[in-house]
Amino acid sequence: MSQEADGQKVDTRKRKFLIAATSAVGGVAVAGVAVPLVMSMLPSARAKAAGAPVEVDISKIEPGMLLTAEWRGKPVWVVNRTKEMLDLLGKHNDKLVDPNSEQPQQPAYCKNATRSIKPEFLVAVGICTHLGCSPTYRKEVGAEDLGADWPGGFLCPCHGSRFDLAARVFKNVPAPTNLVIPPHQYLSAGKIQIGVDAKGA
View 1: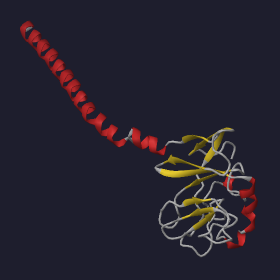
View 2: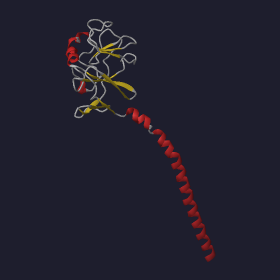
View 3: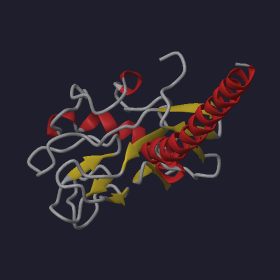
View 4: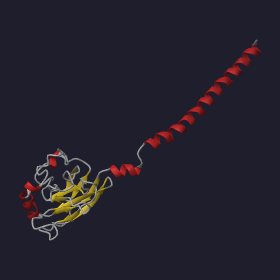
């Protein structure tokens, strides 16, 4: 009887050992399959970076000049508008589709006459709202090829859409809406962050 009891003890120990070993190997196998599966569902570093906010140094943009940054794979313009440029903004509202920015193409804190946080700096996505072309910056007032009443702004070379220096679209052009103003905030007097809403807005 003692031999049978000893034999049963040995079998029980072996059984417990085999169960524990099999469970451990199974657990490792499950983890080995689950980790790559879960990792494949997470966005890549490149994808995270593509959607991440970007900081732009605007301290060196001279009055009247445009700087282009990239955010989410799109060009974002920052224009340092002069006083003369700002003075022209209210003088052609009757020629614009949406002069008061009623369409939600900008954050609430940019729904104003200049479509900006600080009047002198326009921050706009440089993609035409017609077919996604990139307009060119035509700041000269009364440009010879655009007519004497041209107040300066942006011209889409693909289909002729025109936008003023607040990125508002003119009437009778293919683009249906104003250019998009991205969420942004000022980190300092000379630096903005695109992709994050203004603090306190």
